[in-house]
Length: 138
Picture (cartoon, rainbow, N blue to C red):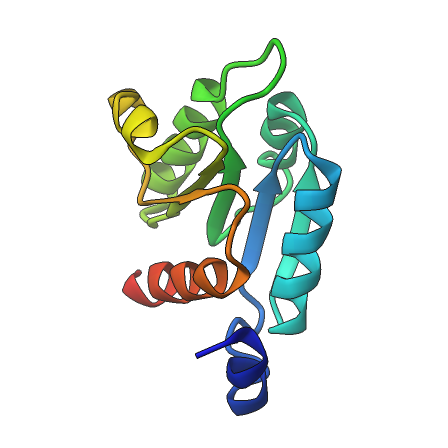
């Protein structure tokens, strides 16, 4: 089912789901935010790992969408912090990784321990489906 079909059938499928998007690519951040907000999600975006870490002091997302490659910044501190906050609050905060690397290359990075992966360019129907599935599982 396409995004337009889903939106027509359930326009607020992600109503009030707090999503944090950390991606160095402005176009990706804006596109994801636009699509997810059209489903009722509350989206916060940022361009760097450090800015994402800073935002975690102010908000508790229900899901994190994160790119894997940032110039001069490893993503491990962000993933560790989100896991720590989730554990501290007794919640699950799924992590959806987006990247230009292949699934095989991503799988070699076992230390990332994420719930989902999408290869860029991201199919927006798949993005919405993954987020719906991840947020309904918790």
